[in-house]
Amino acid sequence: MKRVLSLSVIIFFMVGSHRYAFAQGEAAVPFLLISPGASYGALGEAGVAYTNDANAVFWNPAGLAYQYDNPQADKPGQVTFMHAKWLPQFNFSDLFYEYAAGRYYIDGIGMLGTSITFLNLGQNVWTDEQGNELGTFDSFEWALTVSYATKIIENVSIGVNAKFIQSNLSNVNVGAENQDGSASSFAVDVGAMWKPDYKILNNRLTLGLNVSNIGPKISYIDDKQADPLPTNLKAGLSYKIFDDEFNKLTFVYDMNKLMVVKDSLGHSDNVFESLFYSAWAEGSWSDITSSFGLEYWYGDLIALRAGWFYEDPNNGGRNFTTFGAGIKYSIFGVDFAYIAGDDESPLSGTMRFSLAVSF
Image (cartoon, rainbow, N blue to C red):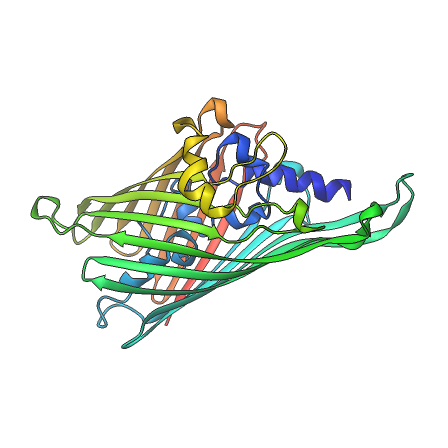
């Protein structure tokens, strides 16, 4: 049990998502913040305003509404898959992350989407209070999401997700509590996207906003010991620096803030109190993390990407660069991303691979 609990703590700090240091260990099921899609990972973990595939289900469901603008060129459906060996510095062969998403446009209704997230925490040894081995158990967490997105007007879209969350840290009873380490909950995400049509911007700027994991607390033992979900505020922009027939260069920026607060006694506000008051009043601007990225496309064939993730030293101090590339051929797209952190970072050397198929 010790291994799975320590891994859970590590994941709170190291998933590469964005939250302030005090709150990093205060929310449950942090796997919901792991960023899917290798192309976004290569952009410094940015993408709330630059969602051009089915991974928009995670990044900003409102971005799904713009993925079938031209029936002559766009495909109504797409599925994406991502695999990553997680925290490679720990060298756990059974610690890995899988993500799959899909979207499909239905005329007269809008864009529908879905995704499934799975984090395997591996096999762990079950011991009693004296350290005697009693057996083994598997630990894993998963979430199933369904999405809907539509345009309010031509340059403004909204999207919403509903998700079911299951956490299985242990399937055996733990200590005197006589309860196992399993819990479930549900949540919603709300996103918006705006493409300002001012002539001076020449349709180059996109703004995005997403609030994810809005839901009730999750409880493993009893309601008095329930922990909040990792409600996260993500906002950002993308800007096309140039865009011609053969060359496209886009800049992206995201900021993130975890909307979770606990007091010194371990009591946490409910999600709406945190979202609209306490996470702002009791936090500081230094708890906001930033992600920057550049993407270059040659035609619609080859992409090169680079990014930078920054977190204030007083709030965790994560600071790493990212690199990646992508290639498209016919209905297929393949992307790769790499995190170049220092040797002390558990995320250093993380590689992500994604596959997209349009139909």
